[in-house]
Image (cartoon, rainbow, N blue to C red; front, side, top):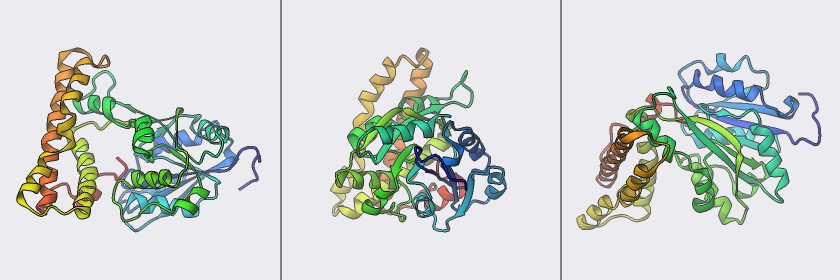
Length: 319
């Protein structure tokens, strides 16, 4: 690779992928058209066990290298990218995302402008398959998906769909926990915060993410995240009696938020008419019921239909 302008730090973009050969094309097209100098960045696509032809898709992009990671987790795939990265800055996104054409330029500018900044999350905007006719699930995602500013300022992490870091940060904090099937970005972000590093949200560092179109896609996401989180919670604090188990099952966070979310939906100006509002409230109810099912299955060791193996076999892990 030719030498680049020393004023522009070299950037490595890391993208894990599983069974999303068609989806990643839009992502790679957007990365190929970045306003950032072409000799100042590379793209690493890490195939995490795909059955479709990722290799054929990535051939046409000169700045893209394809790597393979056998261990079945997003965290392990991202770690593979980090280890092989040439850049001083690492930018993370997902295979179904579409970065803005100035994504790299704005992300790097923010890191350089803010003193000692090594961790920066950008804005994620969801879009619909048919903008003129969004589904109830898409409308739910539009309202609630990817509140990056809240994640960073309140929960101390950025989702890796849009995250810029200094590579040196991994030397101090360590890599993602590869055994975490999901939530590794949350865990790693919390580790970064615990070590005293500044975490920044940048509204002008933007990517697009497709809204989940139907209940299957939305419920798979919920199962993937909640199963992992609840199992970890039970391992840390086992529930010893039937009473404590039932109390834990009932205390789903979805129930605590249901009333306020319903009021938010009724007042939301982005929803058109009563039918859109009712349809999104219906999704809230389905998610509440499904969360009871997930919590019950975790407490009593019942394998759900949408458990880890099926999640990997039937869906792209980045969705």
